Amino acid sequence: MSKRQWIMIIGLVVAVMPFLGFPSSWDATIYIILGLLIIAIAYRLVPAVKTDEKDRSMPFTDNKGSHTKTDVVAQSKPLSDVQESITNDHAL
Image (cartoon, helix red, strand yellow):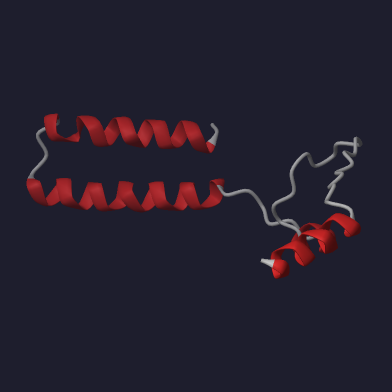
């Protein structure tokens, strides 16, 4: 069985525990055991850490494996317009 199926079964047991009529001391013990099992299974569900040096330096990369590249073009005012704007500001 997969880990997710185990979590579902344990969750179902936790949901029906109040209706099974166990003494309260047993209920508490069973709840603690089931909670620890859920924690252990959930901890093991975390994907393995990547060991590739390139992947560790850049953990949040978009479109990983995509072979398309997008060029970004930024256009600003020509230098002559900027100098003219500065000159006009100082004239005021």
